[in-house]
Length: 282
Image (cartoon, rainbow, N blue to C red; front, side, top):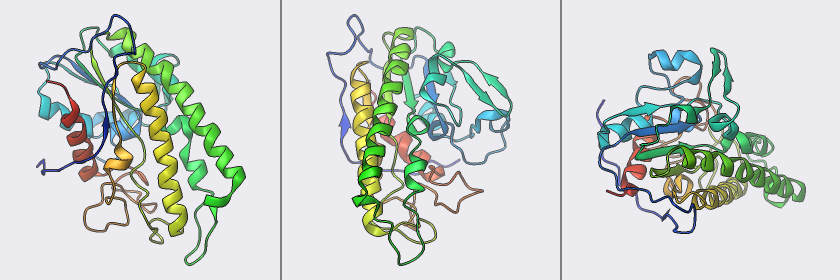
């Protein structure tokens, strides 16, 4: 695989000093790196690996694998699994079509120096919001002015934050000195639609982008509580949504072979890895 250069410019939330007494994330010196989370971490795009077929859709060149290639950890553990929700990381474990997977935190060593986490999308179930906004060409669902839908967004974002926060705290307890880097959701809604790839009116696409900004802000707050670093993938991905036919980082609603619909493709995995690598404290 050839890693192409990706320049990422944007705002990342720095770690805060108020989070967890007695924990001081160490500078990264090549210690154990653990990747955790859902399909944004596992990849969701096809590569012929055993982990792809054993229930978790874990691609050979997902963003954690690229981060590992950039950081050269002494030990790399990828626990990511498509479909994961926040409780699957630390409490419930996860049922997949290839059997039950134990809570991902079980595989986190106490001496981990770096942990990346992509979680929250399945807790929020953003697809339930997006599905109410899709439309035929030259028509509009007016999601942006729907008060009922606005209230639904509010409780879905709050639910996500309330579920992600204890998951991150459980990870912090397991690895008290690791740098925890949380990658936000979104990135696949830009400034306009493009039927049938993104079958949503332009104003509603912009509204959906702001929904993901709100979701990112909730994840930022949860991250701050564990002295972590938040990578705002939604804002940092501006201009690389599926309507960009030259350099998209995300697949469209039509995707069923390259990657899951509205998930990162290989270029997106490289871009997210660059975002993560850029905030690791060395």
